[in-house]
Length: 74
Image (spheres, helix red, strand yellow):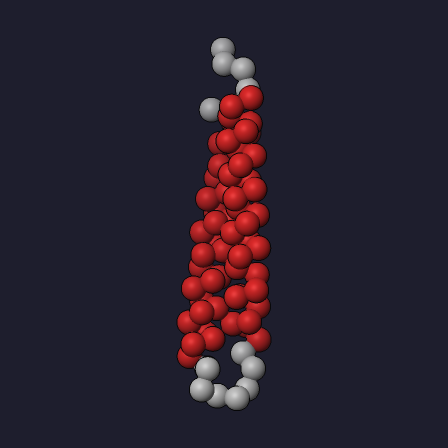
């Protein structure tokens, strides 16, 4: 693996992990305040941004895979 492929793979893992953490924190925050009528802006943002961060991580993972497949082997 080239350094670029390794870097893309590491970024993909970090983004997917961060998105999963965002989703779980948002779900816990939303669930904890579901009985109260006030808005939990942080939980809403986490639930909204989590899938986009995971999707961005998947794009990086796809680009790492394509980069690995298209590079020439020495």
